[in-house]
Structures are given as C-alpha cells and as structure tokens.
Length: 288
Image (cartoon, one colour):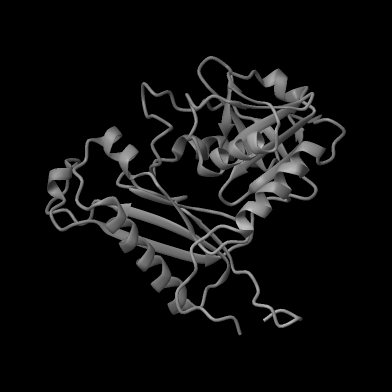
C-alpha cells in the first residue's frame, strides 16, 4: 500500500527480446502497467508460412496464463522484465526441417527483476557502427527472431567506444536503427524516424508514433542520413527496456544543447500517462 493507503501501481516490463523463429505473440513493455500484449501472430504466419495451430485469442490466453503463473509463483510484481521464447519444440531428429518438430511448441518464460537499462533523465551516448543492418534480401529485420549476431557485432563496436549503443546504417548508408532500439530525431519541432525497410518496427516505436500525432506534432517516416542525426535539435530512441531514451551525443558530437529536449520530454510524459492507464491486471495479485 502507498503512504496514503492507496494501492500502488504495478510496474512490469515484458518483452520478447530473445524470441525464436516461432514467435507468435509479443508481450510489450509499458511503464506503469501490469502486462500489455500485442499480437504478431498473423504477421508471423504470412512471413514464415507456418500452420495455424490455435485461434489467436486462445493462444494469447495460453501465453498470458504461463506468464502470470511464472510471475505469481516467484512473487514478481514490480520492475520485472519478461523474456519470451516460443520455439517449434522438440525434434525427432537433428536437421533444419520444421517437419521434425512433432511434439508441439515449447514456451520459455524467463522473468527477472530489471529496471530500464538507459539513463532517461540525463541521456545516452551513441556511435555509428561499421556493421550494416541486415538487408531484406538476406534476413528480413521485420521478423522478430533469435538470430541477433548482426546486432551483437554492432553492440561490440559500441562497447569498444564506451557508448551506450551503436547506430546501424542500411546498405545505402541511411540510418536504420540502433543495435537494440528504434531511433527518432526532432528538427524545428518536426519528428522524423527512419522507414522500416531495414529495421524491426517495434511496438514501442509504433506507440510513440501514435503519441506524436496525438500531441499534434508533425511526424515523418522516411530515409534519414547520418548527418541529419548529427545536426538534429533532439534525438531519442525507443524500445522495450529503454522506453524513450534521449540521446545527447552521437559520434562525439553534442546533440542540440546536450540536454534532454522539450519535445522528448513532452513525449516521455505522454508515454508515461498512456502506460499508467494501460495493461492487463495480474490475477490474484494483492499489494502488501
């Protein structure tokens, strides 16, 4: 209970940060929520051609029940990060063919106490990686899978430069995203984000794009060069574990005046208000 006897809000961060190629549902992070789910099932089927084993509403119910059971059993009701992995399950023999998976899917619910990973008050530092984002000709970045080697190589470059993360470019030299998040810039009050040709169109990204419109700001989705980020008034990233993270330095260059900008702060507040009102209550939970 709170100091005035009011029930405190539960904070849960839930995310498919390590999802396999059989991912069918994504449980998205929201600040100040219980659990908020976003279906990716239909898109997954169209991309992979997998058979539909369950109705979407039934599968969603099963996954949520597994998450709630894990959280309740471990008493995890605050600042928890949920990593979901849904695989095709046990194989009858080794090999690449999904036809060898005859025992049904395996769902892994990995929950841990973990606060947001970025400093959203003072901002973060990014560098540009030489590692390019995957082309759709090879491995489409829109598929949320467990093959993250491309991102890891860029992250290593960021680590070696003492940066929080690394910006990744596409094959034509335009900014795609960072190794872990989507990215936005603000110039003269207008908000822009790279098109989703070479990035994962994240759930937090989509939510923030909706908030930009609701806040009566101009939103543009297009190809954006690295120099535009270097000269932007504000830059911020969006992601499950980071929420809205202001960027104060890119490749050693100060972004804007080196502080969290007014548009970023406005969207952070709008995001916090939204997540405070959204979510699915954890059954049988009682604040003590």
